[in-house]
Image (cartoon, rainbow, N blue to C red; front, side, top):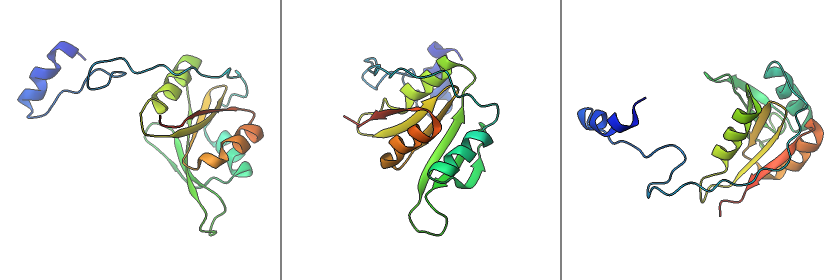
Length: 147
């Protein structure tokens, strides 16, 4: 919680202190990629509701709720051998949603495809599903090609 103390704490624990969140190892600021206009609707009260909508769109089976309340699931059809991961998260505020989106698309060399609207995001491992999920769930695609 006290950034100036981090190096001393790391040394005492025989560890290393990482740079501040949002900065790369050289200390330069991570580029803030512009986000598209994101609708404030639809919003959901529980993560199961958008997971059900995702299931109707591209599949969402083998659901697992994480310790943070996100839902991990597999897209595609059960047993088809053609599945991939998705992580659906509800955010408490639009600012937190936007921060989560920027965090997901900031890593050079790591492509990302998310769909979002209102208070939710779906991070898709299969980037070809973004447009369909956005259309079916009433969201927009936020993508980063990794360059």
